[in-house]
Amino acid sequence: MKAVVQRVSWAKVSVGREEIARIDQGFMILLGVGVEDDEQEAKKLAEKIIKLRLFNDEQGKMNRSIKEVEGEILCISQFTLFADTRKGNRPSFTGAAPGEKASELYRSFCKFLEEFLGKSIQTGRFGADMNVELLNQGPVTILINTQES
Picture 1 (cartoon, rainbow, N blue to C red):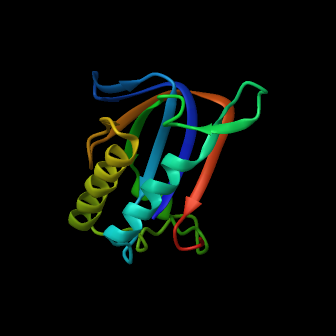
Picture 2 (cartoon, helix red, strand yellow):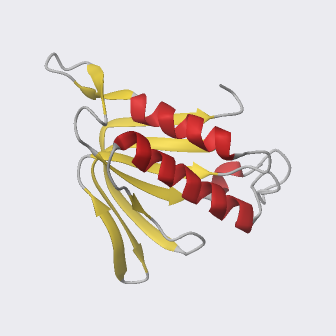
């Protein structure tokens, strides 16, 4: 699995002209599911993200987790994180999991986020053409690849 975790002041996602989810301070996560990923990786990644200390403490150091600041999460599926651009100019997405498997693991990942965070999270609409807006705070953007950890 690959995740892009952005610390945000706010984020929202729309499908067409309909806003389907919005958060205030927290994480906007883009999640890519690979062909070799499984539920254990989803659980491990969700736990890692909840424990990341990316929010400032009283001294201005990134030392607090999303749970500690009672932040919110917006999670969006994004198969293009598995783009392979090594050959030619048209990306290949053969490393991305097929739709059914990716949808199942995306839902599991979101369920694990909720479990570890202790509250509901917001999500995009799997497979939809979405418009995502956010205000990246910091900016802080972390890339996580479970195949490299």
